[in-house]
Image (cartoon, rainbow, N blue to C red; front, side, top):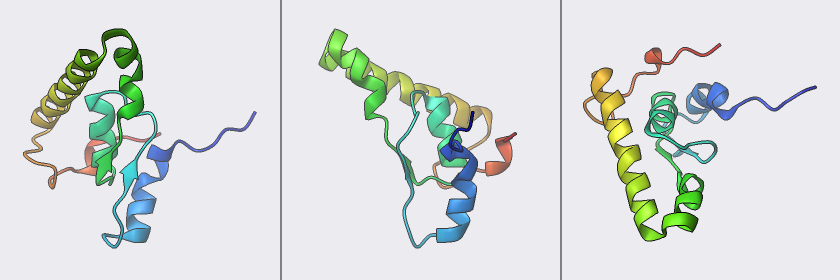
Length: 99
């Protein structure tokens, strides 16, 4: 059975192709701060996370979404600290190992 290539595997190639002439937004499968970190490190300018919070919205309403965003931000901050990334302009794709 054949499957599509996961977008993260092509992100660096896309970044090289468009350089900084185009913003890259990743809008698939981002459900944690670690997912966001990976996409940003591989060349995304931003990530879209709305789908990750739909279950929390259904169950907890606004508070579920607010808590979800807070948790994701803490995860992102934590992994940035662990990899010495001080701000969003300092991501290094070398910390991501693709196989």
